[in-house]
Image (tube, rainbow, N blue to C red; front, side, top):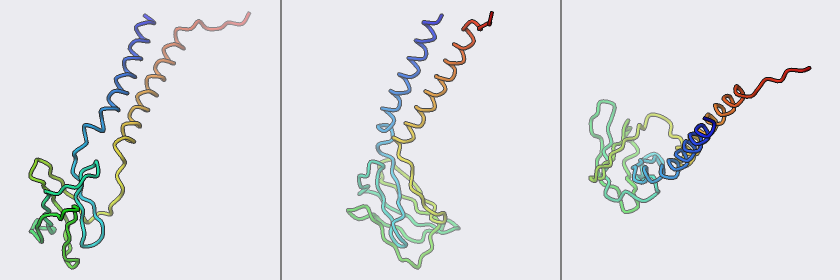
Length: 145
């Protein structure tokens, strides 16, 4: 029985490590809109390549179109600073579509590799905890003479 538990733990850890190695490949082509400064947005994929085919639509609070157009060769889309868009929607025509709420403050996103590493760490901690707990229960209790 003890050998089976060890194999289950080893298989779980191996699966978690394999999943963490494959996770960045699974998200290699997610499209992101970045707010650079008022009047300037940039559309890229999460591997930092430029989304040259993307087109951006700026919408107000009533979903009325304020501006629309393609990004330039560097992935930038500029618009009149006097516009107060609430939402930016980008579509590259290849199945990637994303949106950015311009009313909330922008923050840096946690990299996918860091998220995967955190997930693996949680799984390893849980496996170690349950392994320790199971071994603690199977040990004979010490009785002083």
